[in-house]
Image (tube, rainbow, N blue to C red; front, side, top):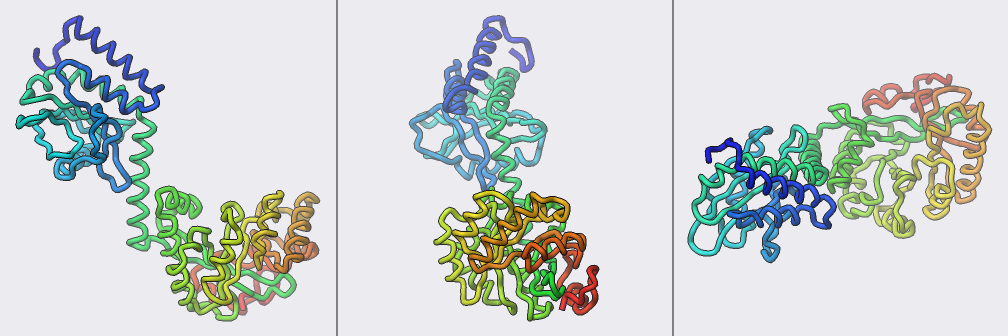
Length: 420
């Protein structure tokens, strides 16, 4: 039967039945394996494999009709040309050809000396190729497989639909991983600094280092993506290195605040070597949204980084969880989230939150820092509530170290002689 011709009624009935069973595989515990077993049960098909991508961007078997096969990855010599073909054509169509796999691979094969014949059907999720369905037949049945490609394309479409979320997620992970690796390699980011001032005098007591990415992606999203693909610490350390190097032109009196995750702190030697290069006293800012479960272990990890390293709990707001972090971590500084600071002079609830944080923080020997101060009225209300330090656009926007250094001694928006 020529390729593209209508199959006989019995073949259509069989195809419809198989498609129905493939769609039902979405409810199975192992949908990829179930799909492969259903397809391998067709007359003439000896083996079926669903391929996805791993964290390195290589093809890997997600499902295999030969459950007894101990192999866990596609044979590299055979997978590389297949990967290249899938990458080179977003809309790659199916193809058929001989495939003589090496022993131990998870490619279609039969016992004996005869090579396998394979049909490869890219799995499309939306506009993207996210994997492949491979069907293997014994011997040299290339023509037989080619004649059945229209039916197999329908099988591939249902497979992509059933496994769409997993396939797309794996593909997205690979793309993000590649993107983060390139970003770190090319240093496609820059540090900026914002002063932290004493609310009673306006004098600068510290500078917080922040990161801006060249492509404009928000830092919180970028760091979250990096953590999701296992590159969080790698990206953090690269950004910290850039910030420490750039901070050398800042006045040496104020401290340098660096945002770090518990995972980066527990990286140990790598972080300790970076911090040893700083020409400033260092404060490590840990977000209240991602503290370590074992706060004692975190404090020990901080102590191991070197003498004089202090800790700030960042993004603190209301709630018992924040108070537990203050008590358990006993930070040197607690930074009040800017959402609490906004219009605080007009909101008794926000004032009560800050008063509570101030009480617990001061009783634990710490100092409160208010973030996001934009107006003098906010500053005055915070000062009346016992907040000693603050930062925000009222004093200065984040900027390059050289610009911040040039502003030293100039009057700020509140009439203080800040940035000194």
